[in-house]
Image (tube, rainbow over all chains, first blue to last red):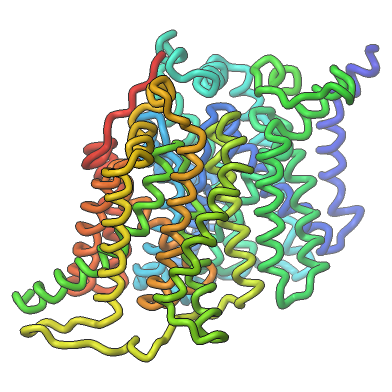
Length: 335
Length: 293
């Protein structure tokens, strides 16, 4: 029993140790690139889930913060010469402040305002970067100076930065889950009226959760801009990024710390493989269709995600499994 | 800004606003009866545009005529999707329906790209470029047609909602679902019918959009942004509000593009959207949502 418990506690640390040595064991760009993007999506999904899973408020605008993070980091580097690895966390804080502002507009009331504001915020951000040509270069985009590293080593700092971002995301998510703040968010998800009546400052909690949630998107966007050495309005604000975060969170399980992580580690490599398989003329389009179909299927048939579905299946036996409502106690068991 | 230019942009704004009103009517109707934000609404409109374009290029069917074909097809499709998919989810977890319609939008966009490629398209008929002079005003024929057709369909919708038994049932369901059920309205059926009507209107607007604007698979994101701004400004679920807001924003868009710059015109929608949420979250005509504890 003790060994089993130790294994259960220890596997994240084992995985972390493994990922830390991967660049030495397999120095091939292809696998490092795949892992790096998986880390990036996992970190952003965990962030998305703080709002979408714990508080139950679906954001369709995380890519807006990702894109603005890209631009902010690019501008800081081009004009002030500040390296992205230094500015990325600060860019994340800027994203958080912006998120708090949007939250102030849309989270004071319940209802659909939040979804609408987050979705349209993406367009506003994209329009601004397109139209403020003197600052952002318009549709031409901005070029970032390259890192001073040999070509085959250039991915290494990004690999470790994204891994660090993921570790931070998981630790923050665990900390929130165990705090009174996290309990308040889950109360909001379960019944916002009752949460408010029992003394939870719902507006403040939601705004704070959203600010924390978008920090990861902004920071990841900053790192991503330097990785590509380029940013333009189409690349920075691809809605498929938001779509990916949502699918990953839902697939693994909303409101569970490890749910979005599992989702990212399954969905990202699979969808990279899919794009590789499809004929290049149609790859982008069919990839979009496939992601859309996966989202609809998950929402229809497995809204609780893999982890909860598996737990419920194991508890009840395969024959009388029924979809379960998300419950705080189950989230706790997995968190 | 000269008075002539102002008059010109007012006329164009009203003509375009008429079409916006029709587009938004379906969206706000669907929200009204089932509290679902149909993120795929604009993707369905663009789908209508593509189908109408194909009918026009291959069979020579005029886009205005193709509306008569699209309406029943989209009506049936809407009923099927609502009854078979959306309703099941809405009864289980309403917050997830927005993710489902988001998924529909993505699927439609991908399919359109796979079938029609992602290059720019437009429906160019013989009368596409014609216009006439009224006093000193320049009036493009297609805009006039689009506004006329839109107002005709909106009048039909208004008559349906005001003078028929079904319309009364729909309005009752929008106002209070539970009470409507208590007085004997079959709210499930009414919801399915309303959803189908909303989708049918979206399909019917497709040809108009295709005649007035260029489109490609990803354009629906621009349109859903505009439409959401209209329905929020008007008050979610309010048809009258959507009409007023569509006119207001249609005019504001034209005036901005004349006075400021063409590329800032889309921003006016978001300025109004964010502004109204700060000042009056329920919109111009919306009722304050009451929720029991």
